[in-house]
Image (tube, rainbow, N blue to C red; front, side, top):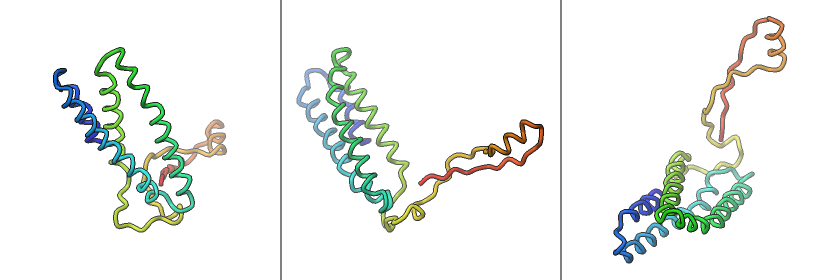
Amino acid sequence: MLLGGIILFFILLVPPGLTPLAISMEMIGKFFMASATSLVYSYTGELYPTGIRNTAVGICSMASRLASSIAPYFIHLGSYNKNLPYIVMGSLTIISGISALFLPESFGLPLPETMDQMPRIKRIKWQCLSSEQKNQEKKGRTHSGKTLVETWM
């Protein structure tokens, strides 16, 4: 995805007289994006445990199809500025490529069978109070705040 987005940005540098170069760069960028899209299905199967694997692959497939149904409308951005479709698509592919770098590595690891086997990642620390503790605080009583460490899969 990163390479496809970078190539889309480099199309902006091609002079107007070199149309074959611009078309070849578009096709190379499309190749990289299609390759990355085909990897979504295999990686999604490795990322989620068996219990929700079918649902996760279905949601990723739905998101992919939704994006591909919206993508043809980006060409209409060219009526405002000739380079705007390349800028928007290049930016979106680079953002998705960078966000994929934050997914956990699954090479050589066994596939998770249950939710408990998924790796836990510390995300956000929140100061949490139960409703009883909040009522006590309103009445002027002190409390011992508990810190909740939210974990994600």
